[in-house]
Amino acid sequence: MLDVILSLSISFAVSYLAIPIIIKVAKIKKLYDVPDERKVHVTPIPSLGGLGIFAGFVFGCMLSTNFGQSSEMQYFIAATLVIFFLGIKDDILILSPIKKFIGQVLAAFIVIYKGGIQINSMHGFLGINELPEMYSLLLTYFTILVVINSFNLIDGIDGLAGSLGLMVSALVGIYMLQVGELAYAILAFSLAGALVAFLLFNFQPAKIFMGDTGSLLIGLINSILVIKFINISESSTMPMSSGPAIGIALLFIPLLDTLRVFSIRMFKKRSPFSPDRNHIHHLLLDRGLSHRNIVLTLVSSNIIAIIAAAYFSLSVSCTLLVLAISVAFFVGIGILQKTKRPRLFVANLQNGTVESNAISTKIVPLTKDSVLEQK
Image (cartoon, helix red, strand yellow):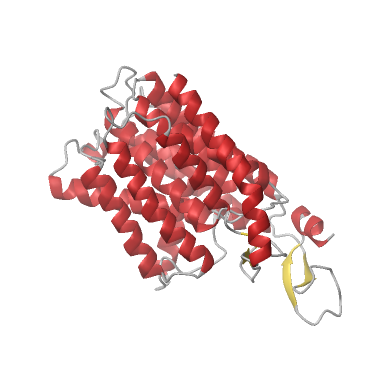
């Protein structure tokens, strides 16, 4: 328990002290996330917050983990180094989707073959239990890559990716602590501590963004934690039925929204990594919700899905539970798409003020956020 508290405290302290310095350096070097037609902010914001998250996470892990008893942790940190260099280069220089994908596959390879993270059983989902080795590897690669990209893609408004990542890591960390998986609890709380510190600077109005460095790291660590949870959920000292369903519920918003957006893009014969404004947070922005209200709504919805999945896992089969979770999500999306859009106004792209005769303008939703950002 003391090791977990130590990891949480160290990761929070390092990130909290590092982020203001990162903001200052980013402003001096002009390392900004510049607004464009897809983004919801109207002024350049430093985008290297992931560097602070990574620093806190790594210090928290390395100073609290007993690598002699949990040798797989060194490989998890090695995989995060791959993700870190991948993300930091993309935040500064921009990487092509194929190079980012190759880097993610390399990180997944380290986690699977050296860290021993692998989905070996479906626990009754679709009537499937133990998986042949080839299908097990394919499913594990697919899961890790989708989860990594789900947090990368959900990072569209202030505080959302960090809050969802904090929720998942904290809940799984508590479970790991209860079942005696101390190393995984440290892994989870090291990330949680760093995210708490980051969110103090990221809630609207954000002083810094996490960038790909942060969102990819959150996705990688939470994919490890959720797969580990699924693997031990039925055989631990605190057994839980329908592990895959609860795992999907843990990732309810980022996972299902990413699968939905990927499907739409491929149906339209576009790359699944091509940008658009079709994510769930964009739909909520277009209905006039503020950043804070969107984060509260989506995190609350995710927590409700987790509680419902855990409760009904005792009486409902894994397959029906996954189906119910998916239907609930898509019904919510359908309701959002049917609601009336707010009126629009013309915003000046150069200085963020509202002007009827501005030289460079765009049409954006009149939301509470928009009004605040124009002041």
